[in-house]
Image: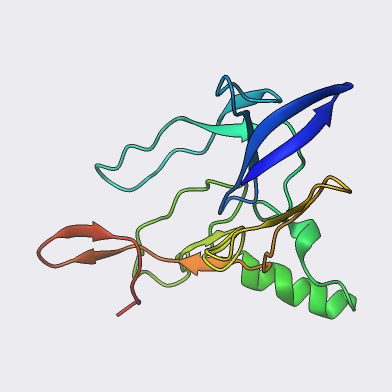
Length: 168
């Protein structure tokens, strides 16, 4: 979306692009340069045979993400110690961690991980509904649903690996 913002007392005609990762990329419309630095940060590698992921991903330094990113124990329910422990036990059935944690291939052995939990999940972050900007207040409004998506990889019989499926 096209926005006019003031940064350090300077008016900038910018474009703001909300993402599925809950970032907002803000670029100067005249130069295409980021308004605030965008850092390339290391992300987890994949254990899927033959899959090579980018070793880094872009992380805008501003504005702050508008949704939780990644999965931590601190995000779990803590209404009672028993519910907290049950939540930790369920979480530990999956691979989880920072945003961009790579999916795994399902293993049929007892006790094996059941998939990877992604956050934001497939329903989280910005979606097709876009966002709105109030030029009077400078406030950006992004509809977002907090979601985490458990996703397993299974082997398809004839076409290699694919990113969803069920344990058989």
